[in-house]
Picture 1: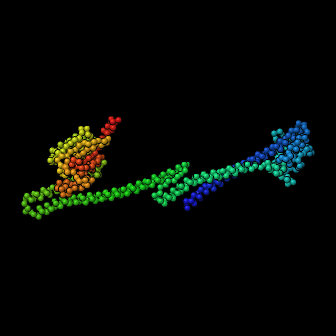
Picture 2: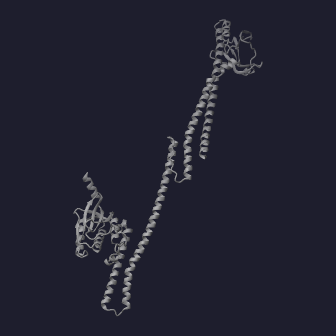
Picture 3: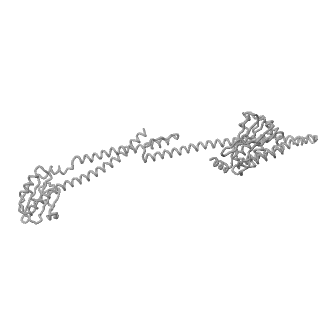
Length: 501
């Protein structure tokens, strides 16, 4: 209801203002046109009277008798606007009346005493005035006194302001029909235009009101195809863009809060895990030390056994702290890790040879199948750490006889590799969590194997830091298979793309 009142009030206010302007303009135009036309008709009648007097003077100057011509004019003026016209001809020297047509008038208005004579085209001189009143009270449309060129004749002319003259001075009904018709047409046009323009304003009013009351409001105003409509659509577009930006900010804020909560939860879990993982070796070390202190007479063989166990747990603590330091460095310094082109064939071959010589693989075979032209973009230290952790993981948990590194494919931007073993594999429910920190499939066996629970998380962080990805799956033939990608040098990828074209 408020919107309806606003629409009516605004549209009719615009219409009223436009109508007043139109009728003011039409009134001014009608007034000036009326005056011009009336002046034209006045001049036309006056010129005909002056022309008649001029012909009388012309006949006199040519020596003709002016009586027949005046009789002709008198008969010709019957039933015309000049029917009451009075023309009196006098002798200019003695004032004697010579000829006259119409009702005779002798006196002129008092204004003529102050009027100056105007010289006409034929040399005659005249005094004339419109709309005057004679001393008798009779209203005259036109009065004049004219003296011929030779100065012998004087003419007095009187044209009463009667109904016939007024009729001929009237501009006529068609003139007013045109004026009022134009005004009515302009008023109708103003109504159409104001209704059209009011639509934009009403739609904007509705948009502003709805937007203020409802944050979820989506404006869909059908604005007309004009400049105001374009502006209205731009306003709505800006509003929609800002609302979408607000929604995105709110969504990002929620995501950021969830990410912060998840990060805090992860930190709490990590802290709990670290605390739990540290307590075990520390507790063992403390127990052995307490026994050594409380039993000074302990046999030497038992003493050495307890000291070796304590040393093993100290080394486990050192390894765990080193792995935690590596994880922290990878997470905090990803952008600072130096990257370069690396011949992965030579590096992997060297790694396999050194690993086999070190005895880390124990009874397992380590195979390398990387093509000669395999150049990747990465960090050599991280790559060695990745391969070393994968080898240690297979040796500790796979219970297989063989493991290997092989090339399995390429894309325009990446090489894809596989690290596999032929061991027992892992139950499917454990696969998604193998890269979680401190996650253990078999807690007792894992600790017995001496693992810190951070080897595979370090592998994943290292691969991700270099711009690659890694996943794990069970092999059909048995064992685990880690599929990882490493980026190719950009120049190499671009050159290969050009050569294919």
